Length: 103
Image (cartoon, rainbow, N blue to C red; front, side):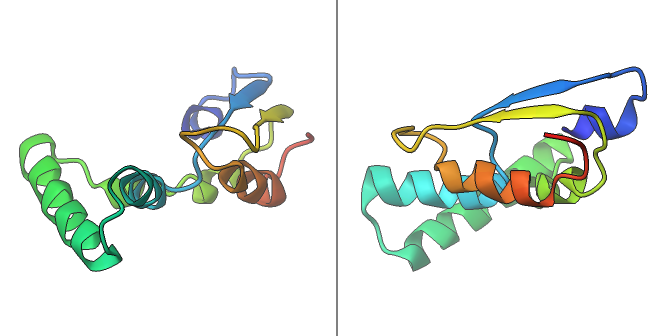
C-alpha cells in the first residue's frame, strides 16, 4: 500500500491479509503465542523497537498502514480470513474502511 501511494504507475492492488499497524500486530501475536501480560509485552516491544531503530534507523511506529490507505486511490481487492492465525481479519477490515480507492 505504501508503494501504491508513492508510485503512480501502479494500476491496481491485491492485499492478502494485510496488517493495519505493525506494532498492534506484534502485540497481538506476542500475547497469543506467549500469554504474557500486556505490560511485559509492551516493555519487550519497546526494547526491540529501540534496537531496530538504532541499528537500522527504522521506526516500527512508521508502519501504521492506515495512513497510506487513507491516501491510496488505485482499485484494490482485500482478502482476509477469520481463521487466519497470524493477521487478525480486523486489520483488513480497518484498512478496507479507510481505503480511498475503489474496492
